[in-house]
Image 1 (cartoon, rainbow, N blue to C red):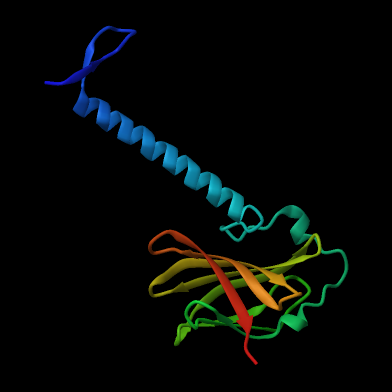
Image 2 (image 1 turned 90 degrees about the vertical axis):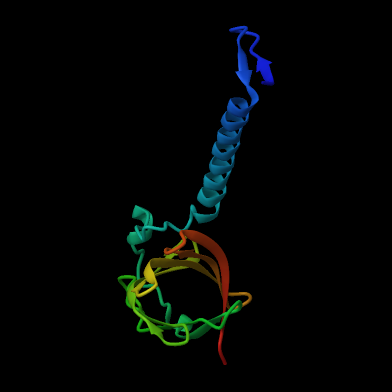
Length: 163
């Protein structure tokens, strides 16, 4: 049996045990890195749908009507339709893939001159999938993330307005 000797305990550890422990450490390091990236990317967009206190407090009326319309995801033809924006941050949203998918909640908020849109889906194969998007006025696009709840994966997405 081949092994490696510990300098502290002066005991031999079988390579299979050492490899298993090293593999666990590598997995933990990779998991930590993934959490750090996820946290960095999603920090302005909470996945839970809960908004920071300052986001929920409006400083006067904000008009989001210019976002009304159909938006198509550039990587697959998924359609997000936004309409009926209210001053309390609520918005009517519809989602199609290509058939309608139930939207359980949709919110829009302006935080530090940036417009953020949150959409949660609740339907078959969409048990809590979430979009966290930010409007980019210079390019008239919605950019952000899509949390695919079934596989628990996070994707960067982009929507363009349909003409």
